[in-house]
Amino acid sequence: MSALNRVPSLMARAGTASALTLAAVGGSIVVPGAAGEAAAATVGTKALKVAASKKGSPYQWGATGPNRFDCSGLTLYSFKKAGKKLPRTAAQQYNKTRHISKSSRKVGDLVFFHSGSYVYHVGIYAGQNKIWHAPKTGDVVRLQKIWTKSVWYGRVK
Image (cartoon, rainbow, N blue to C red; front, top):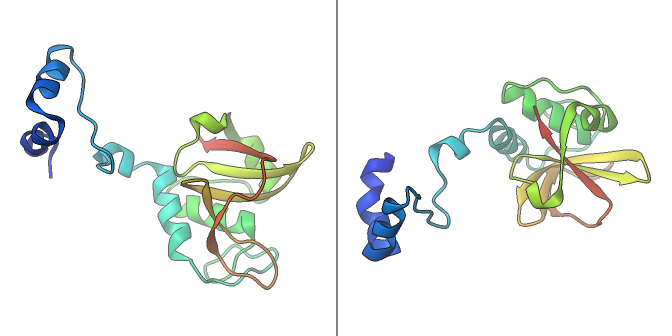
């Protein structure tokens, strides 16, 4: 559905006075849960969909897909399918991203787990404080809540 086709239903949801006020000041109407076409097509969200499609794939140290992954292998594979090249390891990937704050993170950004200055794990941010990742030997690719505050965020350039 195009943005023009959504205007009547958005005005009904926002209220005519609110919509007219927004129009007068050049604002836009934002409806929770209604993602714009541009946001849905970002490299990060494409990579996130690829990672999610690998749900249940076994973890294997050093594996880069398409059926088995380690953590950085999953992010490398997912972003490659979305059209971006990443280096092999979590630490190398951190060094190639634009570092961002927690408050600036968006769905599709990378989440780097660290101990001091050592980056030891990476996943793709899925929103609601969760990541898609390949956790460890004996586990599978899955969605999981971020379990520590020792994380940094990076956006693939």
